[in-house]
Image (cartoon, rainbow, N blue to C red; front, side, top):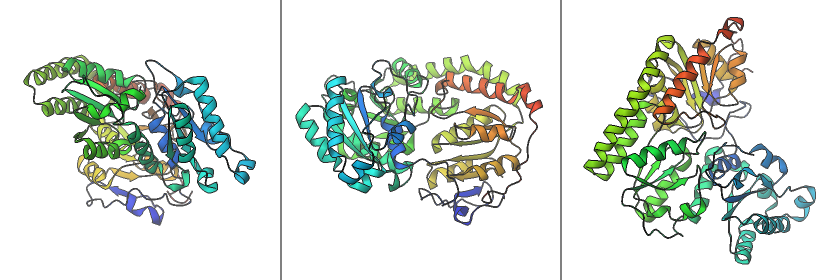
Amino acid sequence: MTEVLAGRARQIARSGEKKPDFDCDKQSVAGSVSQRACTFCGSRVVLYPIADAVHLVHGPIGCAVYTWDVRGAQSSGPELHRLSFSTDLRERHVVFGGERQLEDSLMELIEKHHPKACFVYGTCIVGVIGDDVPAVCKKVTEATGVICIPVQSAGFQGSKRQGYDAACEALNVLIGTGDTSGISKHSVNILGDFNLAGEIWILQEYLKRMGVEVVAQITGDGRVDDIRRAHGASLNLVQCSGSTTKLAMQMQDDYGIPFKRVSFFGLDDMAAALYAIAEHFKDPEMLARTRQLVSEEIGKVMPVIEECRRDLEGKRAAAYVGGSFKAISLVKALRLLGMKTVLIGSQTGTKEDYEYLSDLCDPGTIIVDDSNPAELSAFLSEGQADLFIGGVKERPLAYKLGVAFCDHNHERKLPLEGFVGMANFAREVRSSVCSPVWQFAPRHQNQTPAGKA
């Protein structure tokens, strides 16, 4: 395998050689230019899609700018979440404190926008100067009647995953405070889906055809009042396991709501998710409706997949994404298209997830956790990848190496979830891999060993 930094040895493996013993959820190795974001960013990407709340970043203006519209989450109603508010802390606030600035900002925002709630994100500078954000939030809540929730997300606390935990703690403040009357016994909450390109609306339509009520979307196209009554649902569906599993476990402890980890990417996992829901409710009629739905939807998309497969058979793909469940689904989806996965990785996977990936992948597939550009460049060249699937940070890397690229991150504008999403994915992969532009962009073999950049 390509040479790597010594501190990264337990975060890289090759399937088929030995059972991986990954060292996950650790601080990124200094100097590796890790792809991971900070704690603050992790909390923002989870909470940001709640569309009728004020999201106030208590910190320098750059923190708010960096995470503005970070999810691209669509809303069926209010668009308050698209405004990126900041207290704009400066040198004088570092010296004298920023609590007054925070209080004044909250009061002004509540008076102007009348939000259902306010989320206040503490950044690195707040963690250093020691502003009492919870005290200010409590004071403003009592004065206005609008709940203000502190999000303890100083970036230096850890990685993006710690930000997910901070977001779950903030959400748990809302859950359990609403009226649950009238909720169907066949009801679910959708956790960890952020309604990129309107994907949650596709899922809602499937569930409606099955006879399942969606109580709350946490957090894509989310509403504060729906989240308040989320504890009335019968089942939690956890799509992005890294971001919301902690919340699902807390709701199971507090309210007895079971949860299922599911994926809505690819035909196999989408169908498996719907069947798991129907089987949970033990309703024969629901199960029959689910079988009919799956049969109809697969029948619509299979001709598209078969057509794309003819052009993609034997091609080699690499993927580096945020969540490990998405990575697992991508391996299956690529296999359906006749493609071989030579590299798969994620930012927030667990040891168990990587063990599953190792068993799922073909022998020789490189599996990485929290990778960096030097490693990814080397592995793409080593695996002779024809396609790289990733996000905005990986796109330039692929093009530099003359490799086709597919955006599967939170900036995308094309729905890739659900059965229709698999058809969209197949078309996008084929159009990218088979583009004639690659004859004018010959492959550049990476000359820099990973870890030596």
